[in-house]
Length: 363
Length: 90
Image 1 (tube, rainbow over the protein chains, first blue to last red):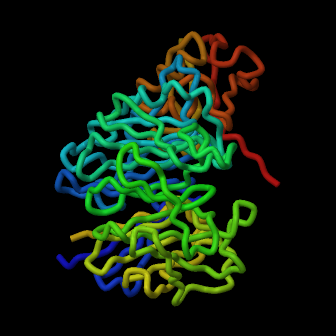
Image 2 (cartoon, rainbow over the protein chains, first blue to last red; image 1 turned 30 degrees about the vertical axis):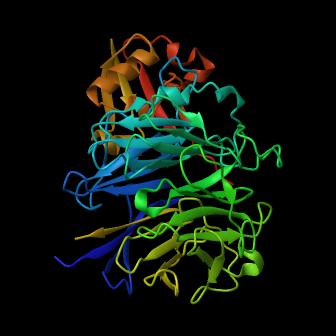
Image 3 (cartoon, each protein chain N blue to C red; image 1 turned 90 degrees about the vertical axis):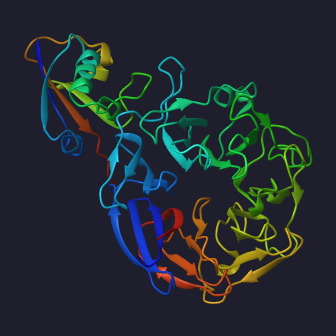
C-alpha cells in the first residue's frame, strides 16, 4: 500500500482527520469524528503492529474521556475506566490535555496529562489507568498555581532512548523530570525566568512552560517555548539557556523539534501575552538550524494579515524524509509545508477553532 | 425497589437505551447500579469524588437533587430519576 500522511486535528467541536499521499500536495478531511465536543489532544500508536488512535475529548456535560479507534478513526469507543483521581483525594479530573504513547520498549504504556495537574499511566492501552502518585503528590504541590489555561499538565515527553526518562510541563508551574520511570520527580526549572520573579533564574516553582520538545538524536536536549521566552536545555539537570536571537517576540505556544536533526526546531511567535496573534498579522514560522543560536523566518505562502492564534499542541511534524510541518489556528485553518517549512499552503479552512494537530505516516 | 433512570440523548446513545430500571436506596446507589448495567456510564454523570458533574442536573421526579440531599437523597419504589444536560444560552 502506498504511504499516506494523516493529520489528526482536534478542534473545539470534534476531531477531523486529513489524509494525503506522500507528496502531501492536498489533504482530504473528514469529520468531525468521535463526537462534537472539544478534543484537546490526539495521537497515534503503532508499537504493537496495528494502528491505534487516541483522542482526549473534554465534554462540557459528561466529563473528560480518552477515546480509542482501532480502524483508523472510522469508529471510536471509550473504555469503561478513565484517568481519574482517587475518590478521597479531594481532586476530580476536569480535562484531559495530553495523551502519548510510552517508550518503544513498553508497548501498551500510555501517559495522560490532566487538569487539575496530574499524570496518569496506563499499561494496557488505556483500558485502565493509575496515578503517577510521586508527581501528583509532589512536595511542591501546595505552591502550584494555575495559569490562563488552568492548572493543567499539558506536556509529556518520553525520551525515545530511555523510557524511564520523562519530562512533563505544567502551566505556570514548570517542568518536572524523572529518570526512574516516575518513582521520583525533580523540579527542572533551573535557569528559567520565573513568572512571578522574572529575574530569579533559580529552580523555583512558577515558570510558565507552554510546550517542550525533545531534540532528535537522543542527546537529551530539550527545546521549550515558555510564556516569557524560548529556551534550550542540553541534558538532565542542566540549566535552561535563552535562545531568542532572530525571533520577533518571546511569546508563543508550540515548539516542535525536527525528527532527525537535533539542531533544528520550529516555533510560531505571537506578539505578546496581551495580544496572542502574530505581530501585525504577519504569520510566520521560525526555524533554527543551529540549536537556537539563530532563528530564521519562514513565511512563504502564509497570509500576512492573519490575526490568528496557534495553541500549544497545534503544531506537528510528520517524520517523512523531507519533513512535513502542520499547524492549526484558532480560526480554523490548517497550514501545511511539505518541504521542511520553506513554503506553506492552506490544507484546510473553516474548521472549528483548532486545539491540536498530530501527524503520522501510514504505510 | 425499582427506580427508573431516564438518560439524556448522548448517554442513551452510549447505553443503547433511553432508560434503565435499577435498584437503589439512594441516588448514589442507583447510579452505582446503573454502572453495573452499563459500565462507565456513571462516570459520565458524576465525578470521581462522587458529586454530579457541574453541568449535569439530576431530577428526582420533579425536584433537582441538589435541592434535597444531593446524591445521598433517599429513594422509594417507583421513583424516577431524570439525568439532564444543563442548557444555557445567550
